[in-house]
Length: 266
Image (cartoon, rainbow, N blue to C red):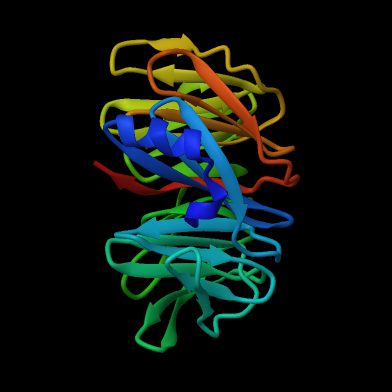
């Protein structure tokens, strides 16, 4: 986000805070960035104007999956990689993984893509795990293997956690059902996990689940920042709770597909 996207008053607020973050939101209209300081939501900027299906971040490098290609860069300047039409992206350590609509799973290898295997209709990815219509798949160095469940909607590698049409599952001695319901989105950080079930947001703090009563409906994505929980609805309204209750701001970009915290500065 450039400086002209933030008002003078907002800059003063940011300067007085201990840290700022940038939330990246993938939408049908493009990739948006939203500046956040504590629970103060700044202005947003539209960084790209083509459909975004998934977003991943690793050490400041952003990867965006879309109908044209997987594009990589510093969010404000993304370059094509030659992968082609992509539905999901993730970073497994330093390795960028991408999945195409026909199920091809590949890893970026220099300027080329190394095909690892096939996974059916990926809906999301995190680390080496893929959430697909056929369940959860794991990407290895030379293969893609089925790891259980059915009709997986989203995945969090920390845990790991997976959402399905039947509920929220955590991987232990096999996939163990943790909460029943129509689960659509999940995010995890340390001992915290947030999940959307039946269009309600729940968070586990390591001891128990809590209904977070977010002031949004039709939730599309959740994400964790350094000290905040984010929720985004399908119409493009962002909500953030940094410990003092929810604050919201409308981005106004429909068809939200993913949200990740791209930057944390302290």
